[in-house]
Length: 112
Length: 111
Image 1 (cartoon, rainbow over the protein chains, first blue to last red):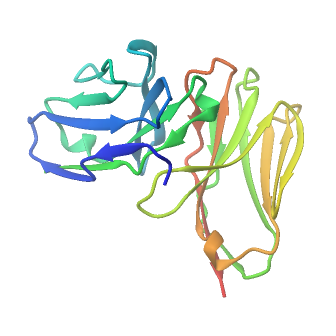
Image 2 (cartoon, chains in turn brown, blue; image 1 turned 30 degrees about the horizontal axis):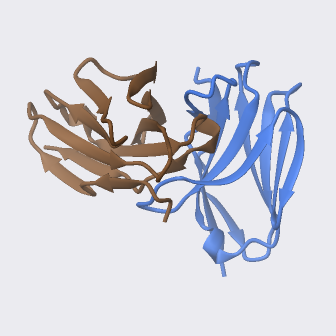
């Protein structure tokens, strides 16, 4: 167990809908990262938050947004969902650097 | 062209074999090199972490980085069926912000 908790584990929703994925980082970790994993693209970095502030942005669509709350948990919001958004979404956390990050078990999103 | 290239396999070896997994990359700014293991339906788990060039050994695992060739390797000695997983290489240009992952190599170790 990495200590990073993601909920829900599975999510099935229809196109056009909006969902929220939640991540609780390891105790003491200030950085949270979101990654998307699909068969054709592999693991793609979406966004990083550090102590409540956005620190880096990767290949995140405008339909997606994230935030990190004062208690350091993070949420990834996905809206106007399309079939192509079906993927595994991972959260990772670290004290600071991405090289020290531990990953959660992921949320499997299926858009039908 | 992706910055990090990795042969997806699958790679099938008998138990006890030496396994060689490789990645190539194009961004010379990468300084940190990592190998992750991912079991089916699980999150990636950090195996090895190397800074700049050289070798690093941890039990049955050895990581090698050749920055002049932009090539990294992971060797697994005395492979076990429990090593069957997808192995992902990842790299960081010292920004500390995000990792660039290869697509992963699927490994099957047969008893």
